[in-house]
Amino acid sequence: MIIPVILSGGSGTRLWPLSRQHAPKQLLPLLDAQSLLQTTATRLDGLDDIGEPLLVCNESHRFVVAEQVRQLDRQGTIMLEPEGRNTAPALTIAALWASHNGDDPVLVVMPADHAIVDLAAFRAVVVRAAALAEAGMIVTFGITPDCAETGYGYIRRGPSLVADSGAFALAAFAEKPDRATAQRYLDSGDYYWNSGLFVVRASVWLAAIAACRADIAAACRTALTDCAGDGDFVRIAREAFVACPADSIDYAVMEKITAGSPGLPAAAVIPLTAGWSDVGSWDSLWQVLEKDASGNAWRGDVMLHDTTGTLAFAESRLVACVGVDNLVVVETPDAILVADKAHTQEVKKIAERLAAAGRSEAQSHRKVYRPWGWYDGVDAGERFQVKRIMVKPGAALSLQMHHHRAEHWIVVRGTARVTRGDDVVLLSENQSTFIPLGTKHRLENPGKVALEMIEVQSGSYLGEDDIIRFEDQYGR
Image (tube, rainbow, N blue to C red):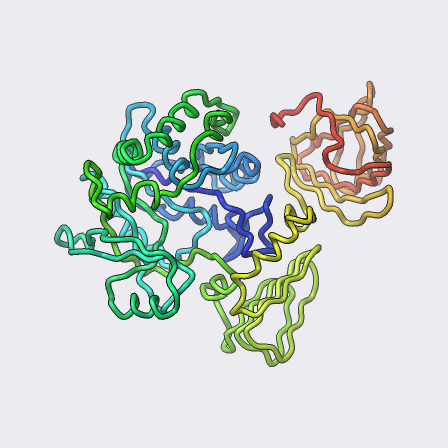
């Protein structure tokens, strides 16, 4: 049995303003209609003996991840990290869960935010890697470099291994190099870009992490022993997991293998040429997108004239580029980025400054997704704000109350069941209601079509934290 393990952590600050802390890049449809997480979850489709995916994600992203898995008609297990502790603990809890019923599957460990264009080539190397993993090796994929890239770490290969496997001994890891060192790596032919992809049997990984980082292994076992089921989710025990040291797979285990530490499994690298990208910057996204004859890639309502080598994204309005070269222009309803394509690795500095200033543009988009649907903040001023709200058929908001605001609701599509104090009423299109400050209330969609409405809030404080929940089917 092969189990896809999808690691869905990270904040993706280098793809701001599309990527935000509450909407990281793996949850966005950057390449096509599916998110990067969704394409990762289907990447092994067609191989024999593939189990449902096992996803490890941040607790705050749980409802979006669950909805995206549901859209794929999958039954994947979603494990919730109360706090990110890097990839070694994430893989450890996944391996513990995958083997808790006595199974020992081969785990194909994939970050959720990578792109792979040639799926046939990728699946072919997974098959070869799985055979080596069954024999007790830890296998990683080395991306065949096509330029002297300084933004990636590198892997150095050793001697060739099993005949016809296409695999080499894993000799060493190298940090991100300077330009001259990267060129030397490229010229040697012995170095690959570090993909962050791994194939390993669950028991092999658990033995390796116990030998290399017994503290991580112990903390993860405790956290999983005290885990709790919650609908679609497995909630990892907060106190034990937060106490777990943070470390990456490379640092915790793989570098110790290449250093020759005794008692560890052998490690192999298989070259991969499949149009891989970690989509780590706007420039790297531009490289994997389809481009016109002038080297431009775009999405949305974009018009280009006398423009070359440019990436333009428009979400809510027209973006026009005239007489420019090698730019990145990204428009969202609440922010616009204009950057030289050669400096896109520095976009994270803007995201960091916004976060330090407590700006909402670092946290979330104007449209915010919830398990019941979404809301879009369309206008705001002193003592008021206006939202568009969509509630999915059969969904309901929590029974709640606000201390500092009153709300006016106007139904523009569908049917709303409104609880207001002791009263329950049905509202249809063009009907409205008023929720006084301090009144218990709930909004539900009992119909078969999406409920759309306008909400006008008024009061002395309009923050999302002014909410007291009495009942909530989503466990918030």
